[in-house]
Length: 550
Image 1 (cartoon, one colour):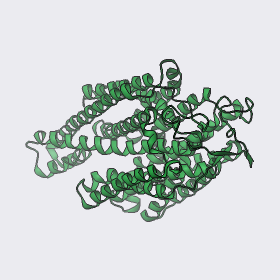
Image 2: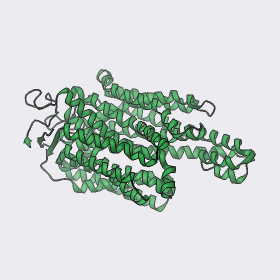
Image 3: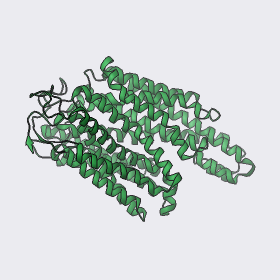
Image 4: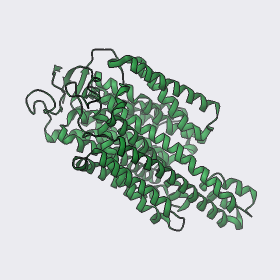
């Protein structure tokens, strides 16, 4: 290991003293590094969404309740979100490459165990360890980009990473649905296992290592408080709709999560330069604006998927594979726009790019809410989906750059983890909020359409549009009436959720116009070059240790 006070491999030579180009990977090496971390990220993202298409198969295989199946799906996200901040900080200290390698190994072994799981209990444990491995992988992939690419290329690289993070979930669901249709649910774990193995081999060969030496110890108190806070709050958002928002366990988790979050902020303020996350940086426009934008955008995106899948499957009667394929135009456009966003931000500024993307996404939501109909089918939602994909892609990349650019280069593992935690919180919040609005709108609309339908099938139909379609099998002459009532009521609930999302995007648009980042988002700060005028006094000095291994 060699000590280099100028920065790690990949640091922009214009940002630090030293000879230009000294220690920098060449263009071909940087492309290989970018491909490697995106493959690793894709493995993580595919595991988030893949099991959603196999819920009925899992229930049959394990003779498990719906609650158990939801835990098999959600425990991965819970473990991932809870450990992102602490493990991102560990990567900064122990070395980003070894933590990435360890994460890929844990993730791969856990994925294999999940694919071979003989019981629901084994599956739950395997999924939890998959989440732990993912929490080691996800923040490091972005931190490698911000510490390896020079500033003039960093924005484009982050755009590619953002596109994979935003649109990769849909691609993962499509491939997963295809595997379930042609093989079995156990093959779902082959995709992340193969991606993780490829990423591991490429990481060992191509990714440089960089680590930091700090003048203070690891913030154990902050790490523990962050884990408890995230677990408590994510649990509330995941379990509230299932158990009830006023259930004792839901309220207990909410209280614990809020107390831990408040305690985390107080502890970090007390720790000062030794904090896991310097919360004073949220007073800076870039960090606050980027975080809030990602929270809302990912929340709305996740809520849209909650609405779109039942529409395509229960209302239009499409298969899981075809329904996932129908989302691909939106995902592809989102990934393309994420790659183009840095160029646009370079011309009109980060704030204007974010605002343009938010405006387009909000317009797409309004378009879907205004013209969706049972008879209109897929074409009644496609224009809105395309506008949303374009808008979200434009908003995500500068928001991510704003977050990573607000923390010093020594804290890029933490910056990347904060970016990921914000995405996970937004996803859970969007599913809970828009899903609840959809359900409430459905229940409020279907009663008037069930007049004359026998009480038994009518009660089943009130549970949801899928229930209404299922109940129609035993409804005799009322079958078509029941199906029609369920589908039309679903569209009413859809409109409630979409209009709520439109209002959220309108509020976000106004916020970004007023409080969006002023400076270029892609300037990653170092100890010699703070992130912005508000951060100058907040950056602690550290000695950088550069360990380059091929």
